[in-house]
Length: 369
Image (cartoon, rainbow, N blue to C red; front, side):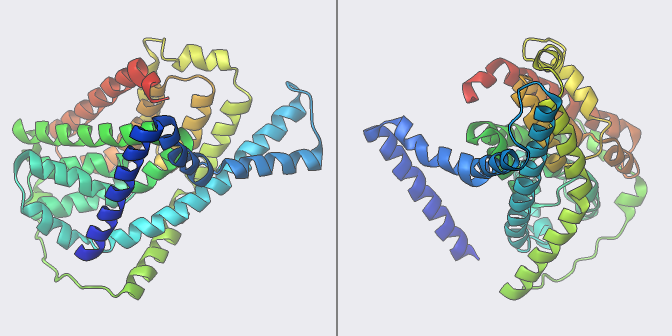
């Protein structure tokens, strides 16, 4: 496993070095071409959008802009394109990530985290959150296991914040919708929020407010079973089926809402409500996102539609972070394992962090577009 990781890292490093050399000697516009192609045609599948658009026109014809037939055909194109794109990317990415995740069962993860202390441990906890389940509800059982294993509150909460916010599948899907710069910055700020949040909770001792049944519960050390390649592939396939079945309703609802926003709501209305020039847009987006229950896969089509209509980048990211990290059902589950003081602190830290991130992206986001 280590040898494979080193080979992959060496290849990635070589690609980056070659790209930098191309940028220095031939110009950065040329160096960006392969990354733009990957973003637009592989992850973004713009060729698929053009194909679906042409297919719809050949079947129903071309309508004058503004007519209900034009709006309906565009909405159908948006729905079909996003559904196919998200399904393909999601299944491929979950398969690959689940294969990687098979090397990090909870027992191994606990052993890895147990080797580190302080902020370094919080960073490792946040990074491990990127290769774990795709919503906060499914992260809470692992959070309980970490707590019973004696890991610090900083590590467990860095993990709990990072797990729903940032994962490798969401990074690739974000690339398909918004491009590399925005996707990478989303992941970076999500990890920073997780590390800072975990550090505050640990240093202030608020993290000690865990329900007694969690602290007093026994932690069973299970021997780590090494899986064969075939078993890892079977595990990855099962994770694809289970995850897609779970997120399917949210993808459908998200795409329908996205199609409505993209084709029906006036651009001026979206800009006035969630544009970067509106001082309240980030606050409104954060508040609207919190009561919802979805994961990042269901919110991405909505975010894409808002982005195309002129909503501020910070407002969009605040909405996505709020939905994934502060959904009402996950907070209800979290309340069962932590005391009210810790729950309020967790919500406050994440909420303030999301709002700050939102305003920073609204102010400086133009640099990434």
